[in-house]
Image (spheres, rainbow, N blue to C red):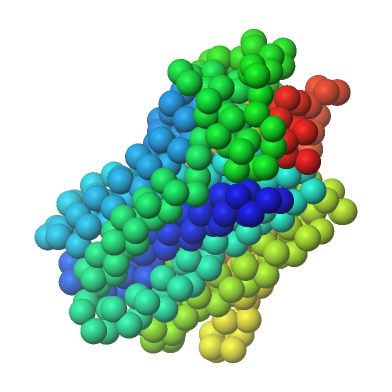
Length: 437
């Protein structure tokens, strides 16, 4: 990895950290918002789901723009949406307004997550790709952890609205970083060939200390036949893999976003203070950081899908245990740490498994579609939890019910493998392989 590639991955890690904070900002401020607006559990569930629904739409509608207009342009658009959405959330006066603003903000989060996933996969070398993707995933819990720490201080000093102002300003600050350190992806330039593609490719090659090209290399057969549309990934030979990836994402996100959204509130209802509930969420994110690093270091050796399945089964077990541990701070926080370790490892596994199965012209389209379907699960998980709690379900029951999708996700991983042809789509076009090493 050259310093240029490291810088590109680092910018993506920072964007992912911002996304992690922006996703969980409602969880951090839920108790304060519920007090100000007199919300019921079902109201909070809908508020959690509004942002997640926006993420699904962003992954479906905005992420594919990076296959048409470029990864860099799409990331800048997503940062603009995040900035406007977070600042607008600080000015709302009703629950409806906040829900609509969170829906809008989710567009930028969903589109941004899908796009940075592709940029990291395309700019990292084969040897360091799994670790780079893990570091990108690590940005998510680290951003949420640091955001939780800032949230405690900001809420105590200035109220919950200040947390959203902070998030908007951070999004604005990341725009210069993208402009300076994140040029357009080589895979996109070679596969899509926009105006001035050769000159742009050679500028990137110069930053990689590689000789300039006299002409663009011919695209691979898969790249030549694929079109940047949802229809392309719904046709053979990608149909089975697309369905499997969508189903796996749905199951993983159903379980994961239940815990990501509800953990602070559940912990406070079990006797912890508001700051204690946020601290529990931070501890979950720290466990997730360890899980991401472990996945990155061992996925290449153990096998990406095999290790992914282990994390998913682990999350099922940890979630079930969380439903039965005594309501003491030590037991609850220990179970939360275990959940975070397996939870982020499972999400990280999806980031590593899905992009390589699509060729460059439809890579973000296919990945974005799978993520978008996953957001349906992310919406369903918190909403279903709110309904189950309102219906009187006890902690062991709703935790088990919302842990079961992880077992289905393990089966979907086998379906992804079964749907791949003998010659899988490469993450990096052959023409660029000598550049990347």
